[in-house]
Length: 439
Image (cartoon, rainbow, N blue to C red; front, side, top):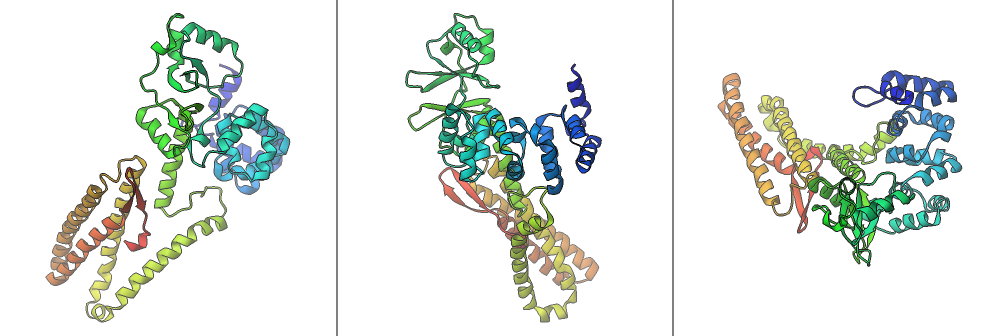
């Protein structure tokens, strides 16, 4: 095992994160302005770990870090940095360093970087690419945002349908433009329409005279360049795809999507759903400052304040009743809190069902009815408990009946409020996430 490899392993915890003492040493080197020490600490680390460390730094330390380490930022590190802070990193890097990093990146990573930049910055970086690479990136940028055309890489290994395994191996051995990582050789007809693909494992394990079309994968499927990237990620997860060719409107091959990019989209979609459920901005990050964090969260807190004020206004209309039965004021939070929990439970289940594509327009009615019945059953169970408790502790069956009725109504409304939606199309459903104050 090489010395660098041993250093990389010892610098990680068992959860594949940089060890805390390594992070502390990096922070100390940043504070001391010690570029040599910083280089020594980061040299054995994987690009993903360096990107993770950059994300964890405060904005002030991140700026100093980039001044000290900018010359070592390459395409691999840049492609691993979270999009929420990538603009900040790009602005801090010298143009020469940034241009060299872009030239090292695959076309899909270049597109992912450029699509968040202003047009002048895009043009400046595109000018640093070779003519063929620039044409491929510009082609991808012409596709709609969040489409498969933006997600794909243009570097695709293809072979004619009439080739044998021997032809393919000879081709792979002589070409020097091949992607660093690829899993399939795509078979195309004379019009460059993909007809199947063969895994590298099949090619290496088959006899040279075997025809490639005789060992193609059964799971072969193409993806339209206009397909939404969320649908692409779902297809990869559902059909256990490793890579899939992307075609244009004429079914001609234009690129390839690999599993790492599809899973990144899937993670982003799940993260987005979770943050929306919690009423947090999609671009929130742990390194955000207090003012930025407050600005992102304040609008939803204002909405919650407004809905809570409506609740207070309704309660104030029963001031005379509450003054007569003071115990009701003490018991109201019990009913309200259980309703909030029920709404959150229903909301979480609905968001998960959307993320996994289990919730569609075809089963939406059944899901809503299920939540309605679940709320009713939970309300009945809690109502019985409250009725018995009120009768025994307070000696008032009437108050118990009132609390039980309120609990049933609250559970039903909360369950429905957490899963209110409408059909968006024949094959999809859209969750409307209500503020928690409504439940």
